[in-house]
Length: 112
Length: 115
Image (cartoon, rainbow over all chains, first blue to last red; front, top):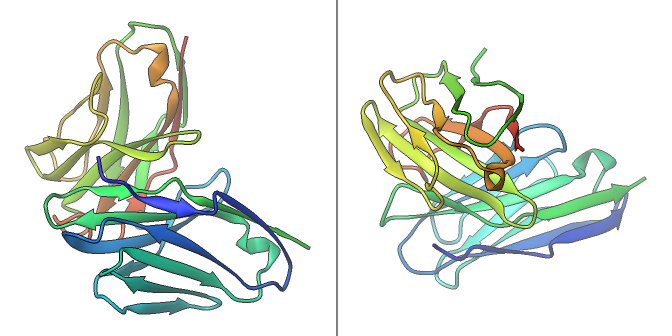
């Protein structure tokens, strides 16, 4: 079983703060890195799929970067809003198989 | 509307009573997968399918069966459920046969309790 770790496990910020969290994954046999947003009582929704070292993706106030050589990805949220409160999941796909391995998630809570 | 539909949303059953959780997608996706989510453990893959009649084990396949007779359907079967299978289950699908290349679309989840 591949080791995909996310940190921190949880994070409390004030509305307007910018924040970031980390996803660490094996640096060998990299194929793709996904980020998902999972709100309570809903199902996970895809934010980004990244496949190239140095990739940067952006959707509104949320952006992500990828370093496949050292095995990490950062997710940034600029000016956090209460509606950003959710669990953010990363998932690693390697080229040895057809599975996506998920990290444990970072739970973000934004206080108004 | 493009979606992945799971049924039922909630299920309470007793140890040993066979059950099936259905999953259907209307996006003509080739790849389908089942995950379970447990507190502190994240999403763990149970089984996946790259196409009709092609299925393979994920990280936690014990106690589960799947089938893929049609492209749109991927049911999860628990032949003899046990309390350690109490969990939140998600079905997901994606466009390509390679899991990593396109995003997963998730169903709404099935919360299973086995007493």
